[in-house]
Length: 354
Ligand SMILES: *Cc1c(COP(=O)(O)O)cnc(C)c1O
Image 1 (cartoon, protein in one colour):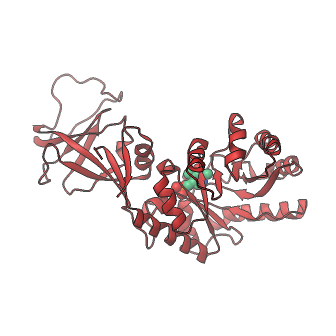
Image 2: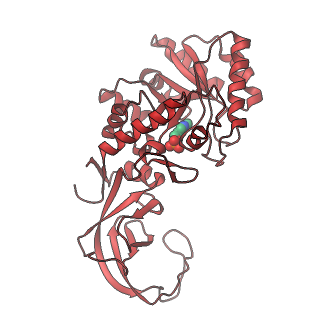
Image 3: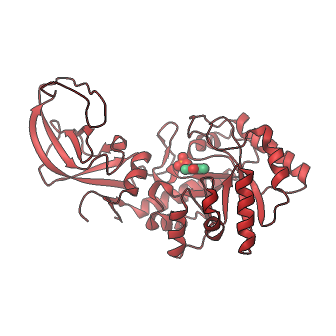
């Protein structure tokens, strides 16, 4: 494959999936494997399934339809709240979805009824992170409105931590979800099978044994793909952090001053950049830029390579302290989650198993 491209070590991913599943199962937690971070790239999805993950989640119906067309029959949930304009596709291709709007759930009910299916929903509850979710004191009211809907199974409750607000899960906030589920079960005489209490950033709480008893599902992306807790960027026990590698090709190497010369205005990103004058430095440019993905999330694997910045098409690096790099060399980078997510969506970046 010509650069830019990225490679996936399927063995390592399969291992990560099995390891995260083991850690979670030991604490009574089922894992939904979240695949949006790689745009549901099929070899990665297969690796998760082979690692023992039995349920998948993605935020985009287009990815899910592609997986169904590729023959994936395992349960898949839509993670992003469904748009009213996509409910027909959602009930056709997804076993369930995450929801917080009564109107959307009613629309899902109609759509599911029309095709003779039952659609499962996890009601999302807002517990401080301020992304999607019903305020806790409104949950019973929402339940009243949806409990009798045909073709909808309220499978359980869900919540999100560490996403928008960066709020960490705790015993106290996960207990709110458990208490709400008990109240629902008693009031409406039903059993909620699933309490989906978090994502990768919630794994440390589980490992410490401080999760409220009753939480029985995590939706995990980054923890499997990159083996990290996103809230601290610390590695998770027994996982690989380097299952993915991005390669870019060097197209220029020159010694240049480290500060620009001439009158300075705004740069290509609309910023007024500042530079430290370190004297003349050896610089390399790789054919990779902000149009390909979020370059701020790249970490060079080669010692001595420092990323200085990027334009839409050029990644500019200081390689004064690095050896053996020439025009035509490919440089390898680790990707943080935001980089993985963006580069895997780029039509300019090819993806392949190793
Ligand atoms: C993306 C997403 C996840 C996965 O988050 P990670 O931090 O990658 O584990 C879980 N739940 C929802 C609703 C999501 O959108």
